[in-house]
Amino acid sequence: MSTRRKIKNILILAGGDSGRFWPLDNKILWKFLGMPLIIHILKQLDKYGDNIYIIGNPNNIDLIQEVVLQYGYANRVKVLMQNSKMEGQAGAVDSVQNVVNGELLIVNASDYLDFSVLEKITTELHRERRIVLFGKKYPDYFPGGYFKFNESNKVVEIIEKPGKDNMPSDVVKLVLDYFSDSSILFEYLSSTLSDKDDIYEQALNRILKHAGYDNDYHVYEGEFVSLKYPWHVLSMMKTFLGSINAQSIASSARVSQKAEIIGNVHVGENVVIGDYVKIVGPTFIDDNVFIGDFSLIRESHIGKECLVGSYSEVTRTYIGDKVSLHRNYVGDSVLGNNVLCGAFAVTANLRFDGKTVHSIVGDSLIDSYLPKLGAIIGHNSKIGINTSFFPGVKVGRNTWIWPGEKVSHDIADNMFFKDGNAISNTKQ
Image (cartoon, rainbow, N blue to C red; front, side, top):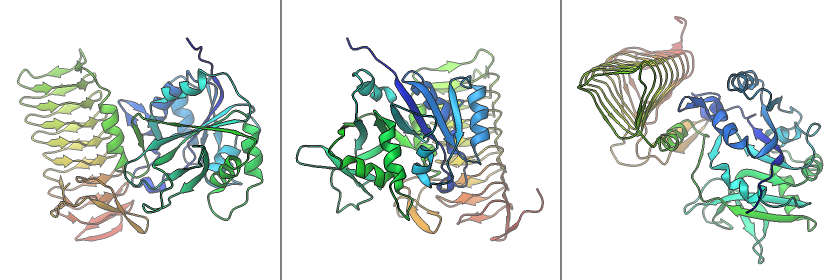
């Protein structure tokens, strides 16, 4: 039987600004099953690496350090600031040039997968001048970097977003890159010039074309989810809910004998579940949640200290901490922390024409590829009674919606929305 060794250095990239994730923020700190995503990743990677580094940015580095300390990784993980001399992934990798030597594995902090795939490296003897890339096959076009193979089935180039008519293969590159000698990567990064945010990608292509390096690749066949756009929270939620393999109800929970709990459902400490409540798994309900009479919860994730008022329905939805609902329908939606929904506010999640739901990101209309997508609401927002949300609408942080509004388009942070118009919210 092969003996597993550890990779000398693992670098977790967490320096992105989460701009495409609006109105949500700090995507690597979003909680699933009660823990931030970055901690779920660290729990897996811990057994595969000797030294682990996380690269943060000015907006998230303190928060990363806080959760690393909170979950007992402060002596195990070094948190560093991203190098401002280079943009993107190149800058993040260059940030460890003076502290890392030897083996290096690069991982994306917003990607979740089964890292046991790393045993393909750690059960083999260390080989010098070796590069291993991981990819995943996609049956349909995926807007990422594709492996280009030569006649010997070696990866010779990564083609970024080639378009569905120009795909060089069906294998999309993951951000899971192994270098037996990190100095190779640092050398090429420092000598690669570009006026675009693609120095890392160009440096990697130059390395792949160099005959002196042993280039391998592995196709990852497990489940892979990534947080890029805010609706991807729902995909990742589904993955984590799928890991709940039994029904678990805390001894301190108070569940009415008239309530019905079906399937794999986690009920946390001090949860109160009223009469005629129906909960269908897989569902996660964190601590100190109150669920009022006649409510229905299906395939959803509910954070700590939430109120789900009587007669509410929550379906395939992610709800953050300290959210209050009052006779609402919330379907296929994401609600941040401290969101208040007045009575009878509802989220529409299905287009009449049956097409997938689109959403504006920056200046582009992006296809979510989801047949059902409700509202996405940022932290600390308040929704008035009888408010209706169109499919795919996003509401910013600290924004208030006047009662009875029909919200058909995105509303920015810190706004007060009344009579179809948004003005600066001076009432906070």
